[in-house]
Length: 65
Image (cartoon, rainbow, N blue to C red; front, side):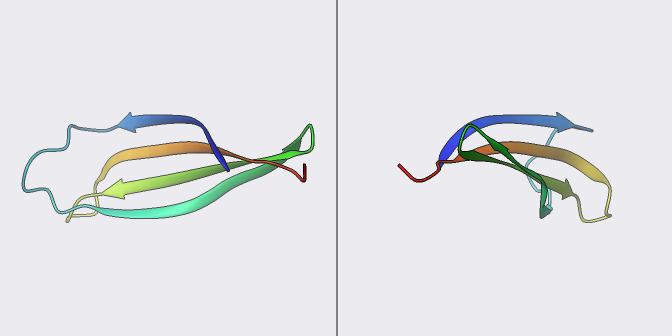
């Protein structure tokens, strides 16, 4: 597995003392050239449930070599 890309979308800055909870989901899985591209999305909220940041990662899972 290889880390392909990562991006962050903030609603507000994270500050010291924040109590954060992240929920990870697989947004998509695509095949490309014998490899799989897995897009994972982590939605992070604060103690009140308000959105703080979404982190999106693309992982490349290498096919059989």
